[in-house]
Length: 115
Image (tube, rainbow, N blue to C red; front, side, top):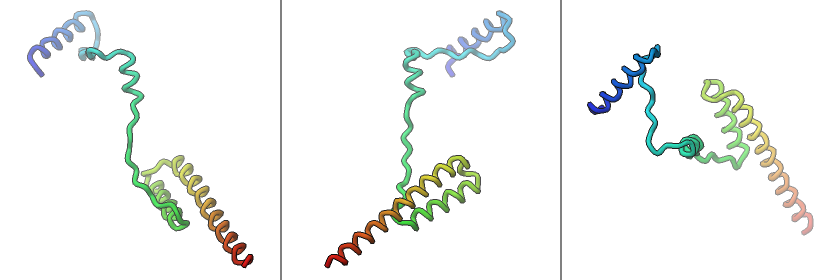
């Protein structure tokens, strides 16, 4: 911290103490060029997090992922409400995989029967 900055902080502390305030902590300085719009925009910034792509093409993949999130919830790494949401989504994905498999089997039977 430069000496001029220290001096300005000390003056601010002295002025606060003279005005009868109980706290002797320095007031936060307002940054130049930071208005309400800029502060609002800064709060609304999106953070991009790279998530590894998990294979979920087969029932075994879905089962492995379900077991993984269950273990994370048991260890306290995953909130139970998130476990519920993820489990539901994985259950729906499981149903889709089963339906697609049955659809492919029916189509194969119909093609073989037509010959």
